[in-house]
Image (cartoon, rainbow, N blue to C red; front, side, top):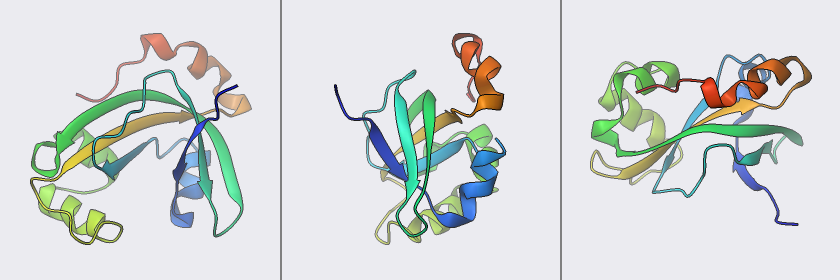
Length: 124
């Protein structure tokens, strides 16, 4: 059996993910995640982990991340996004390729949402 891919998550986002309030992350580079793929979100600092399913993957650069994705990420524009990403990627630039990864936590109360994943409309 193939191992699940994993995404490290900062502790400040754990509750928001568990509550379904945060379902998106932006990572440097072109990542090869696939819609419908099961992944593990984890934090090695706190031994926290949760299963999730990829609901959308968008490749862009920092300057072309959509307004909808910026809003869901919690920033108001590309400059603020760049500053937020530099916490994790100090040399990132506006022209740097990024992957917007949308996911849904695989929690008991999300079973109906997961069943409807093919009908779900991601940010554009």
